[in-house]
Image (tube, rainbow, N blue to C red; front, side):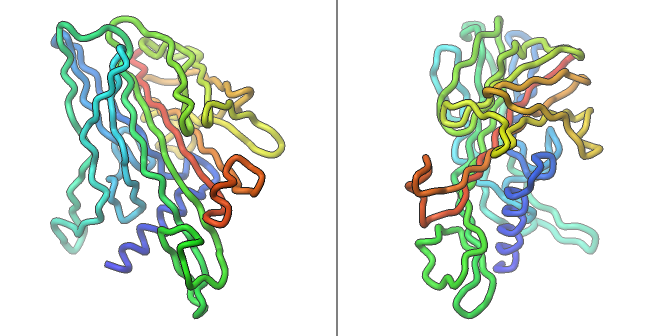
Length: 298
């Protein structure tokens, strides 16, 4: 079990520190709409890994994530908590010479609309628990890894890396007419500036990316950008569209039908005079990841 935990932590860090969001593990929200039978419903769940709509599980040996909140907010502003998937590492339910079988919990659940449901945009969000990873050389010269801040570890000889990571994901369900989406000014968030209700191939879609309410901007100091790919474009071949963020804004032209995921990763260095000064002596860097998923029907 100790070796399994070590694999989980090492894989998670490799995912977090990956330069490209195409290579890193991502957290996203799946929302499969159906209006065949009125008033309609959506089946929602959480995705984790590399390939939408379903890739890995939350407690995978290849890198796990702890989902802290999974919610849906109605057009009238009321937020309802959804079931959260487990992130506890478990042994396989079956083992064979060729493969192991793991129970998969991706928080799949149906949201059934009603005749009296409020018209407008329903926002579905998932947020991971902030997690700290500290890699260090201990006083015996061994390389170690702990889920603790540097100040909580007593046997450090040399710190190799210490980071705090958190992921934010969202999707939307529109009943009736789309409405302008507002910023929450919390964490890293991707806000659509385009009506996502009926996006078609060839349409230009625009997004705004904010970090605690402030727009990210590409510069010589920080290369801020979004990536976009779909289950029918890019991801199976290992590439994505990329658009630099200018004054928090970026856009791309939709290439295919299917589910699209827009992602952004942001890194901050902890300094004594910076906005993260309360983390000095605890971690060296703070990484945040955000995603937004939407469907292109034609």
